[in-house]
Length: 133
Picture 1 (tube, rainbow, N blue to C red):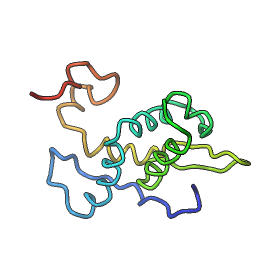
Picture 2 (spheres, rainbow, N blue to C red; picture 1 turned 180 degrees about the horizontal axis):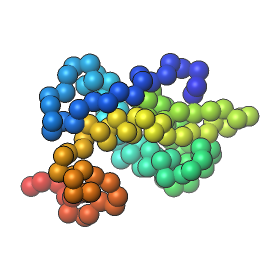
Picture 3 (cartoon, rainbow, N blue to C red; picture 1 turned 90 degrees about the horizontal axis):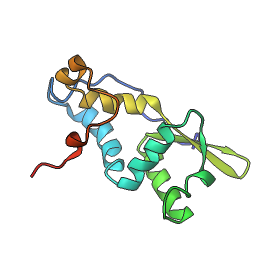
């Protein structure tokens, strides 16, 4: 929620393919990537990112076959990683994605080829999601 320390200011980190990532940016980015390593948290982030307005925690349990406390745990991990923020409104908390955090992750993962070809965003082709053998 807004009473905890703000995430580090958005910095423009070089793409992983353009230069080795220094230790300080790696320390900032690693918790974000770690938080996204869980499928539920990745889906929660996607759900929040796809909404134009903050989403009430009460509306986040229906899409998942998980209890409210489990969803709250995953939201806390995302919040502590600096990916989302929450605002208390009465007895409910409304969550939103922090766009600067997503921009940081996107910039680090962008490749020159993806940017030039225009494939750095949009729907993912099924082939790009297959795991290497």
